[in-house]
Length: 169
Ligand code: AR6
View 1: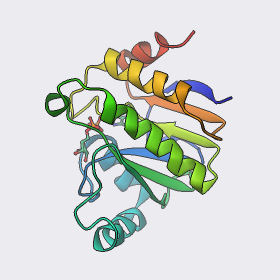
View 2 (view 1 turned 180 degrees about the vertical axis):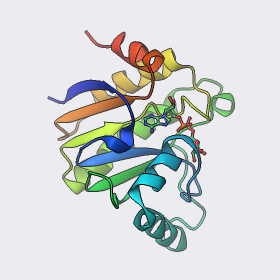
View 3 (view 1 turned 45 degrees about the vertical axis):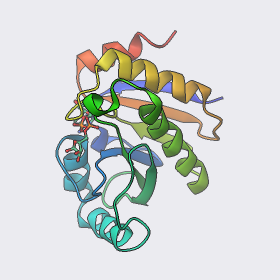
């Protein structure tokens, strides 16, 4: 059984086996969670992302998929980068957003990670409505077959925290 926990705060300050990054296909950084993770995690993360771009992800990481790197200076063993869908492009279809959570947990299982911290993927720059994103995130994690013992959603503000809390018993 995977426990789902909620925390309000900055995901880069969390202690976990793996911290999930709401990245973009380039894997080379951006704003929001992505910017914060690279800033606090230091250059080792970007170095490994560059190596991934030079090898198996020459065209970038496709939307809905996930890949792990070192966590650099973060208090974690790995960062799992996943690319959420842009709400307008998705037309509201939850498939790719759900895939981000499922694929990140699959990568976590392959690594042996037992605690995984997730941000609210796609709810910032990619503009997915928070309540809908929270529902998709929680339902997908609940339905996932995974060895991960704790999935911790780390919500940046009260609005996000409230939306996720509304999905839990
Ligand atoms: N800790 C936890 N949550 C955060 C933090 C933080 N430090 N910073 C922001 N959030 P976003 P996306 C929340 O924009 O929508 C980047 O440029 C934020 O309030 O980080 O998937 C990438 O490079 C929001 O609720 O990710 C991509 O180009 C949530 O995290 C693009 O943005 C996600 O916001 C990805 O957009």
